[in-house]
Length: 173
Image (tube, rainbow, N blue to C red; front, side):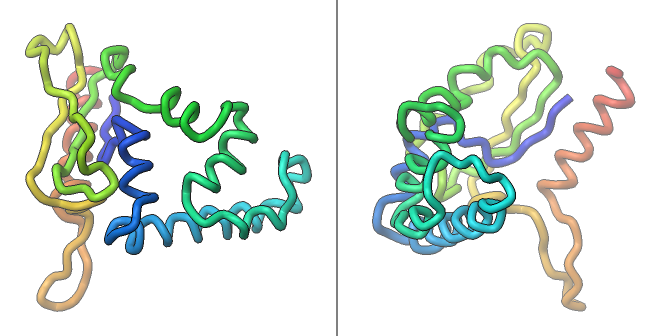
Protein backbone atom coordinates (compact mmCIF):
# COMPACT_ATOMS: atom_id res chain seq x y z
CA UNK A 1 0.00 0.00 0.00
CA UNK A 2 0.87 3.64 -0.17
CA UNK A 3 0.04 6.55 2.14
CA UNK A 4 0.90 10.14 1.18
CA UNK A 5 0.21 13.77 2.01
CA UNK A 6 0.14 16.98 -0.04
CA UNK A 7 0.01 15.62 -3.58
CA UNK A 8 0.65 18.20 -6.33
CA UNK A 9 -1.94 16.85 -8.77
CA UNK A 10 -1.39 19.76 -11.13
CA UNK A 11 2.26 20.90 -11.33
CA UNK A 12 1.48 23.78 -13.68
CA UNK A 13 -0.88 25.25 -11.05
CA UNK A 14 1.68 24.64 -8.28
CA UNK A 15 4.27 26.45 -10.40
CA UNK A 16 2.04 29.53 -10.56
CA UNK A 17 1.58 29.48 -6.77
CA UNK A 18 5.31 29.10 -6.06
CA UNK A 19 6.60 31.56 -8.66
CA UNK A 20 4.07 34.41 -8.51
CA UNK A 21 4.64 37.35 -6.17
CA UNK A 22 2.87 36.94 -2.86
CA UNK A 23 2.94 35.14 0.45
CA UNK A 24 3.37 31.63 -0.95
CA UNK A 25 6.42 32.62 -2.97
CA UNK A 26 7.96 34.65 -0.17
CA UNK A 27 7.40 32.02 2.53
CA UNK A 28 7.73 28.76 0.62
CA UNK A 29 9.00 29.44 -2.89
CA UNK A 30 12.07 31.44 -1.94
CA UNK A 31 13.13 28.92 0.71
CA UNK A 32 12.55 25.99 -1.62
CA UNK A 33 14.56 27.67 -4.39
CA UNK A 34 17.40 28.41 -1.96
CA UNK A 35 17.41 24.79 -0.77
CA UNK A 36 17.41 23.43 -4.34
CA UNK A 37 20.31 25.69 -5.32
CA UNK A 38 22.29 24.87 -2.18
CA UNK A 39 21.91 21.12 -2.65
CA UNK A 40 22.80 21.27 -6.33
CA UNK A 41 25.95 23.28 -5.58
CA UNK A 42 26.80 20.84 -2.80
CA UNK A 43 26.83 17.83 -5.15
CA UNK A 44 27.92 19.62 -8.32
CA UNK A 45 31.64 18.76 -8.11
CA UNK A 46 30.96 15.13 -7.18
CA UNK A 47 28.53 14.51 -10.04
CA UNK A 48 30.81 16.13 -12.67
CA UNK A 49 28.43 15.78 -15.59
CA UNK A 50 25.70 18.34 -15.06
CA UNK A 51 24.65 19.89 -18.40
CA UNK A 52 25.17 23.43 -17.06
CA UNK A 53 27.92 25.46 -15.42
CA UNK A 54 28.01 25.73 -11.65
CA UNK A 55 27.87 29.54 -11.76
CA UNK A 56 24.49 29.34 -13.57
CA UNK A 57 22.84 27.93 -10.44
CA UNK A 58 22.91 31.25 -8.54
CA UNK A 59 21.47 33.10 -11.54
CA UNK A 60 18.09 31.40 -10.96
CA UNK A 61 15.55 33.89 -9.60
CA UNK A 62 12.53 31.54 -9.47
CA UNK A 63 11.86 27.85 -9.06
CA UNK A 64 10.90 27.77 -12.72
CA UNK A 65 14.32 29.21 -13.63
CA UNK A 66 15.93 26.40 -11.65
CA UNK A 67 13.66 23.76 -13.19
CA UNK A 68 14.53 25.01 -16.68
CA UNK A 69 18.23 25.00 -15.84
CA UNK A 70 18.57 21.79 -13.87
CA UNK A 71 15.50 19.57 -13.80
CA UNK A 72 14.58 19.83 -17.48
CA UNK A 73 18.15 19.48 -18.70
CA UNK A 74 19.24 16.70 -16.35
CA UNK A 75 16.11 14.60 -16.95
CA UNK A 76 15.68 15.39 -20.67
CA UNK A 77 12.51 17.44 -20.59
CA UNK A 78 12.05 20.16 -23.22
CA UNK A 79 11.57 22.77 -20.48
CA UNK A 80 9.88 23.24 -17.12
CA UNK A 81 6.39 23.16 -18.67
CA UNK A 82 7.18 19.83 -20.34
CA UNK A 83 8.32 18.55 -16.92
CA UNK A 84 5.10 19.79 -15.27
CA UNK A 85 2.89 18.16 -17.90
CA UNK A 86 4.66 14.82 -17.86
CA UNK A 87 5.09 14.50 -14.07
CA UNK A 88 1.77 15.70 -12.71
CA UNK A 89 -0.23 13.06 -10.94
CA UNK A 90 -3.76 14.06 -11.98
CA UNK A 91 -3.55 12.06 -15.21
CA UNK A 92 -2.25 8.85 -13.65
CA UNK A 93 -4.26 8.49 -10.44
CA UNK A 94 -6.56 6.03 -12.21
CA UNK A 95 -3.53 3.76 -12.69
CA UNK A 96 -2.98 3.27 -8.96
CA UNK A 97 -3.13 -0.49 -8.46
CA UNK A 98 -2.36 -0.89 -4.76
CA UNK A 99 -4.38 0.24 -1.74
CA UNK A 100 -3.68 3.93 -1.27
CA UNK A 101 -4.63 6.71 1.11
CA UNK A 102 -3.91 10.39 0.58
CA UNK A 103 -4.53 13.34 2.89
CA UNK A 104 -4.88 16.65 1.11
CA UNK A 105 -5.41 20.01 2.78
CA UNK A 106 -7.65 22.34 0.79
CA UNK A 107 -5.73 25.38 2.08
CA UNK A 108 -2.28 24.11 1.01
CA UNK A 109 -0.66 27.26 -0.46
CA UNK A 110 1.39 25.20 -2.95
CA UNK A 111 -1.77 23.70 -4.36
CA UNK A 112 -4.38 26.48 -4.21
CA UNK A 113 -6.49 26.62 -7.35
CA UNK A 114 -5.72 23.12 -8.52
CA UNK A 115 -8.60 20.85 -9.45
CA UNK A 116 -8.62 18.12 -6.86
CA UNK A 117 -9.75 14.69 -8.01
CA UNK A 118 -12.81 13.18 -6.40
CA UNK A 119 -13.19 9.75 -4.89
CA UNK A 120 -15.45 8.85 -7.81
CA UNK A 121 -15.38 5.09 -7.50
CA UNK A 122 -16.86 3.60 -4.37
CA UNK A 123 -15.75 0.07 -5.21
CA UNK A 124 -12.21 -0.40 -3.87
CA UNK A 125 -11.62 -3.06 -6.53
CA UNK A 126 -12.08 -0.42 -9.22
CA UNK A 127 -9.85 2.27 -7.73
CA UNK A 128 -8.06 1.47 -4.49
CA UNK A 129 -7.01 5.07 -3.76
CA UNK A 130 -8.95 7.09 -1.23
CA UNK A 131 -8.30 10.80 -0.80
CA UNK A 132 -9.30 12.56 2.40
CA UNK A 133 -9.62 16.31 2.02
CA UNK A 134 -9.27 18.49 5.11
CA UNK A 135 -10.44 22.09 5.24
CA UNK A 136 -7.24 23.25 6.97
CA UNK A 137 -3.69 22.05 7.40
CA UNK A 138 -1.59 24.10 4.99
CA UNK A 139 1.34 22.47 3.22
CA UNK A 140 2.17 19.17 4.90
CA UNK A 141 0.15 20.32 7.87
CA UNK A 142 -0.98 18.26 10.81
CA UNK A 143 2.58 16.98 11.27
CA UNK A 144 3.59 18.03 14.79
CA UNK A 145 2.11 19.98 17.60
CA UNK A 146 3.55 21.17 20.86
CA UNK A 147 2.23 19.87 24.11
CA UNK A 148 1.90 22.18 27.08
CA UNK A 149 5.28 20.94 28.29
CA UNK A 150 6.78 22.18 24.97
CA UNK A 151 7.70 18.73 23.68
CA UNK A 152 6.71 17.81 20.15
CA UNK A 153 4.78 14.69 19.38
CA UNK A 154 3.41 13.11 16.27
CA UNK A 155 -0.05 14.37 15.52
CA UNK A 156 -3.07 13.64 13.37
CA UNK A 157 -1.74 13.35 9.79
CA UNK A 158 1.23 10.99 10.32
CA UNK A 159 -0.88 8.92 12.70
CA UNK A 160 -3.63 8.55 10.08
CA UNK A 161 -1.15 7.54 7.38
CA UNK A 162 0.49 5.01 9.70
CA UNK A 163 -2.89 3.56 10.68
CA UNK A 164 -3.72 3.00 7.03
CA UNK A 165 -0.42 1.24 6.34
CA UNK A 166 -0.89 -0.93 9.43
CA UNK A 167 -4.35 -1.87 8.16
CA UNK A 168 -2.92 -2.82 4.77
CA UNK A 169 -0.21 -4.92 6.36
CA UNK A 170 -2.60 -6.71 8.72
CA UNK A 171 -5.47 -7.30 6.29
CA UNK A 172 -4.17 -7.37 2.75
CA UNK A 173 -0.54 -8.47 2.60
